[in-house]
Image (cartoon, rainbow, N blue to C red; front, side):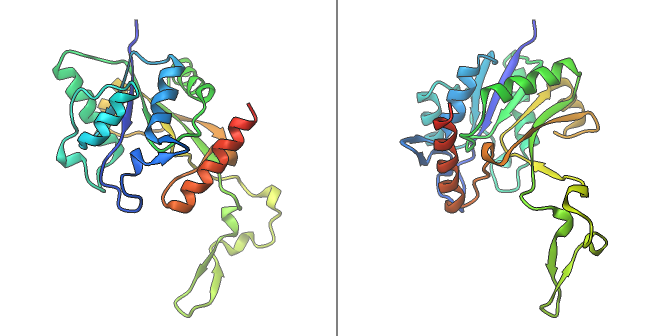
Length: 232
Protein backbone atom coordinates (compact mmCIF):
# COMPACT_ATOMS: atom_id res chain seq x y z
CA UNK A 1 0.00 0.00 0.00
CA UNK A 2 1.31 3.44 -0.96
CA UNK A 3 2.41 5.85 1.77
CA UNK A 4 1.66 9.58 1.71
CA UNK A 5 3.61 12.33 3.46
CA UNK A 6 2.57 15.95 3.97
CA UNK A 7 5.44 18.42 4.44
CA UNK A 8 4.72 21.96 5.66
CA UNK A 9 7.93 24.01 5.25
CA UNK A 10 7.98 26.82 7.84
CA UNK A 11 11.20 28.77 8.08
CA UNK A 12 11.54 31.17 11.02
CA UNK A 13 13.45 34.04 9.44
CA UNK A 14 10.86 36.03 7.46
CA UNK A 15 12.01 39.66 7.15
CA UNK A 16 8.94 41.25 5.54
CA UNK A 17 6.49 39.86 8.11
CA UNK A 18 8.34 38.82 11.31
CA UNK A 19 7.41 35.31 12.50
CA UNK A 20 5.05 35.18 9.53
CA UNK A 21 4.39 31.45 9.76
CA UNK A 22 2.95 31.64 13.29
CA UNK A 23 1.50 35.15 13.16
CA UNK A 24 -2.13 35.41 14.30
CA UNK A 25 -4.62 35.01 11.45
CA UNK A 26 -8.23 35.51 12.56
CA UNK A 27 -7.52 34.20 16.04
CA UNK A 28 -5.07 31.36 15.34
CA UNK A 29 -1.48 31.01 14.12
CA UNK A 30 -1.66 30.99 10.33
CA UNK A 31 0.25 27.69 10.09
CA UNK A 32 -2.58 26.00 12.01
CA UNK A 33 -4.86 26.35 8.97
CA UNK A 34 -2.49 24.32 6.79
CA UNK A 35 -2.10 21.72 9.53
CA UNK A 36 -5.86 21.49 10.11
CA UNK A 37 -6.57 21.18 6.38
CA UNK A 38 -4.00 18.42 5.94
CA UNK A 39 -5.38 16.50 8.93
CA UNK A 40 -9.01 16.97 7.90
CA UNK A 41 -8.29 15.82 4.34
CA UNK A 42 -7.49 12.31 5.59
CA UNK A 43 -5.00 11.98 2.73
CA UNK A 44 -1.75 11.48 4.63
CA UNK A 45 -0.02 8.81 6.67
CA UNK A 46 2.13 11.48 8.31
CA UNK A 47 1.96 15.28 8.56
CA UNK A 48 5.18 17.05 9.47
CA UNK A 49 6.49 20.59 9.68
CA UNK A 50 10.01 21.30 8.47
CA UNK A 51 11.52 24.17 10.46
CA UNK A 52 14.73 25.26 12.12
CA UNK A 53 12.81 27.37 14.66
CA UNK A 54 11.97 25.70 18.03
CA UNK A 55 9.03 28.10 18.61
CA UNK A 56 7.45 27.20 15.28
CA UNK A 57 8.06 23.53 16.07
CA UNK A 58 6.15 23.80 19.37
CA UNK A 59 3.23 25.63 17.74
CA UNK A 60 3.09 23.04 14.96
CA UNK A 61 3.04 20.14 17.43
CA UNK A 62 0.31 21.81 19.49
CA UNK A 63 -1.98 21.69 16.43
CA UNK A 64 -1.25 18.05 15.62
CA UNK A 65 1.72 18.06 13.25
CA UNK A 66 4.93 16.14 13.85
CA UNK A 67 8.40 17.70 13.96
CA UNK A 68 10.64 14.62 14.08
CA UNK A 69 13.78 16.66 13.35
CA UNK A 70 14.79 20.28 12.86
CA UNK A 71 15.83 21.60 9.47
CA UNK A 72 19.52 22.08 8.74
CA UNK A 73 21.02 25.58 8.68
CA UNK A 74 22.00 25.22 5.02
CA UNK A 75 18.33 24.95 4.04
CA UNK A 76 17.05 27.66 6.38
CA UNK A 77 17.94 30.93 4.65
CA UNK A 78 16.17 33.15 2.11
CA UNK A 79 17.82 31.36 -0.81
CA UNK A 80 16.88 27.80 0.08
CA UNK A 81 14.75 26.29 -2.71
CA UNK A 82 11.66 24.38 -1.62
CA UNK A 83 12.86 21.31 -3.51
CA UNK A 84 16.06 21.18 -1.42
CA UNK A 85 14.00 21.33 1.77
CA UNK A 86 11.82 18.46 0.56
CA UNK A 87 14.80 16.34 -0.46
CA UNK A 88 16.32 16.88 2.98
CA UNK A 89 13.07 15.74 4.63
CA UNK A 90 12.95 12.61 2.49
CA UNK A 91 16.58 11.83 3.31
CA UNK A 92 16.06 12.31 7.05
CA UNK A 93 13.02 10.04 7.06
CA UNK A 94 14.88 7.34 5.12
CA UNK A 95 17.66 7.45 7.71
CA UNK A 96 15.15 6.38 10.35
CA UNK A 97 13.63 3.73 8.09
CA UNK A 98 10.54 5.58 6.88
CA UNK A 99 9.78 5.72 3.16
CA UNK A 100 6.93 7.42 1.34
CA UNK A 101 5.67 6.96 -2.22
CA UNK A 102 4.00 10.34 -2.58
CA UNK A 103 4.56 13.72 -0.97
CA UNK A 104 2.49 16.87 -0.78
CA UNK A 105 4.21 20.11 0.15
CA UNK A 106 1.70 22.52 1.69
CA UNK A 107 2.78 26.07 2.42
CA UNK A 108 2.21 27.35 5.99
CA UNK A 109 0.68 30.68 4.89
CA UNK A 110 -2.07 29.35 2.64
CA UNK A 111 -5.33 29.40 4.65
CA UNK A 112 -7.45 29.38 1.48
CA UNK A 113 -6.47 25.82 0.54
CA UNK A 114 -9.43 23.62 -0.39
CA UNK A 115 -9.53 19.97 0.66
CA UNK A 116 -11.41 19.16 -2.56
CA UNK A 117 -8.57 20.64 -4.62
CA UNK A 118 -5.98 18.71 -2.59
CA UNK A 119 -7.88 15.50 -3.34
CA UNK A 120 -8.18 16.42 -7.00
CA UNK A 121 -4.43 16.98 -7.14
CA UNK A 122 -3.74 13.56 -5.65
CA UNK A 123 -6.14 11.87 -8.07
CA UNK A 124 -4.55 13.59 -11.06
CA UNK A 125 -1.02 12.71 -9.89
CA UNK A 126 -1.81 9.01 -9.61
CA UNK A 127 -4.38 8.48 -12.39
CA UNK A 128 -2.30 10.34 -14.98
CA UNK A 129 1.06 9.06 -13.65
CA UNK A 130 2.41 12.61 -13.28
CA UNK A 131 5.70 13.58 -11.67
CA UNK A 132 3.95 16.46 -9.91
CA UNK A 133 0.70 18.44 -9.79
CA UNK A 134 0.11 21.94 -8.43
CA UNK A 135 -2.54 24.70 -8.61
CA UNK A 136 -2.26 27.77 -10.83
CA UNK A 137 -4.27 30.95 -11.29
CA UNK A 138 -4.56 33.32 -14.24
CA UNK A 139 -3.13 36.83 -14.09
CA UNK A 140 -5.64 39.58 -13.24
CA UNK A 141 -4.85 41.42 -16.47
CA UNK A 142 -3.62 40.01 -19.81
CA UNK A 143 0.15 39.82 -19.51
CA UNK A 144 0.44 40.37 -23.27
CA UNK A 145 -0.68 43.98 -22.70
CA UNK A 146 2.12 44.58 -20.19
CA UNK A 147 3.99 47.89 -20.02
CA UNK A 148 7.51 48.70 -18.89
CA UNK A 149 9.34 51.90 -18.11
CA UNK A 150 12.24 52.86 -20.36
CA UNK A 151 15.51 54.48 -19.31
CA UNK A 152 14.05 57.82 -20.50
CA UNK A 153 11.14 57.54 -18.07
CA UNK A 154 8.59 56.82 -20.78
CA UNK A 155 6.54 53.63 -21.13
CA UNK A 156 6.45 51.08 -23.89
CA UNK A 157 4.53 47.90 -24.61
CA UNK A 158 6.45 44.71 -23.85
CA UNK A 159 4.65 42.97 -26.73
CA UNK A 160 3.58 45.77 -29.14
CA UNK A 161 2.36 43.20 -31.66
CA UNK A 162 -0.64 42.57 -29.41
CA UNK A 163 -1.75 46.20 -29.01
CA UNK A 164 -4.77 45.69 -31.28
CA UNK A 165 -5.45 42.02 -30.42
CA UNK A 166 -8.83 41.44 -28.77
CA UNK A 167 -8.56 40.37 -25.12
CA UNK A 168 -10.52 37.19 -25.79
CA UNK A 169 -8.01 36.22 -28.47
CA UNK A 170 -4.97 36.50 -26.21
CA UNK A 171 -3.56 33.29 -24.73
CA UNK A 172 -4.31 33.01 -21.01
CA UNK A 173 -1.14 32.83 -18.92
CA UNK A 174 -1.03 31.37 -15.41
CA UNK A 175 1.21 31.61 -12.37
CA UNK A 176 1.84 29.33 -9.41
CA UNK A 177 -0.94 29.69 -6.84
CA UNK A 178 1.59 29.25 -4.02
CA UNK A 179 -0.44 26.69 -2.07
CA UNK A 180 0.76 23.11 -2.54
CA UNK A 181 2.68 20.63 -4.71
CA UNK A 182 1.89 16.96 -5.05
CA UNK A 183 4.96 14.91 -6.05
CA UNK A 184 5.93 11.36 -6.80
CA UNK A 185 8.81 10.83 -4.38
CA UNK A 186 10.84 8.62 -6.75
CA UNK A 187 10.59 11.23 -9.50
CA UNK A 188 11.47 14.03 -7.08
CA UNK A 189 14.59 12.20 -5.89
CA UNK A 190 15.63 11.48 -9.48
CA UNK A 191 14.92 14.89 -11.06
CA UNK A 192 15.54 17.10 -8.01
CA UNK A 193 12.96 19.61 -9.22
CA UNK A 194 9.26 20.27 -8.68
CA UNK A 195 8.32 20.99 -12.29
CA UNK A 196 8.98 18.76 -15.28
CA UNK A 197 7.57 18.06 -18.71
CA UNK A 198 5.19 15.66 -16.97
CA UNK A 199 3.79 18.18 -14.45
CA UNK A 200 0.04 18.84 -14.53
CA UNK A 201 -1.93 21.74 -13.04
CA UNK A 202 -5.28 22.51 -11.49
CA UNK A 203 -6.74 25.91 -12.38
CA UNK A 204 -8.09 28.05 -9.54
CA UNK A 205 -9.85 31.41 -9.56
CA UNK A 206 -8.66 34.63 -7.93
CA UNK A 207 -10.95 34.22 -4.91
CA UNK A 208 -9.25 30.94 -3.97
CA UNK A 209 -5.71 32.34 -4.04
CA UNK A 210 -3.74 34.98 -2.13
CA UNK A 211 0.03 35.14 -2.03
CA UNK A 212 1.11 36.74 1.27
CA UNK A 213 4.27 38.83 0.92
CA UNK A 214 3.31 41.92 2.94
CA UNK A 215 0.68 43.16 5.40
CA UNK A 216 -1.65 44.31 2.61
CA UNK A 217 -1.65 40.75 1.25
CA UNK A 218 -2.30 39.52 4.78
CA UNK A 219 -5.46 41.64 5.12
CA UNK A 220 -6.64 40.59 1.66
CA UNK A 221 -6.21 36.93 2.65
CA UNK A 222 -8.45 37.55 5.67
CA UNK A 223 -11.17 39.03 3.47
CA UNK A 224 -11.01 36.15 1.02
CA UNK A 225 -11.02 33.56 3.81
CA UNK A 226 -14.12 35.08 5.38
CA UNK A 227 -15.79 35.28 1.96
CA UNK A 228 -15.11 31.62 1.24
CA UNK A 229 -16.30 30.57 4.70
CA UNK A 230 -19.48 32.57 4.22
CA UNK A 231 -20.18 30.81 0.94
CA UNK A 232 -20.03 27.32 2.49
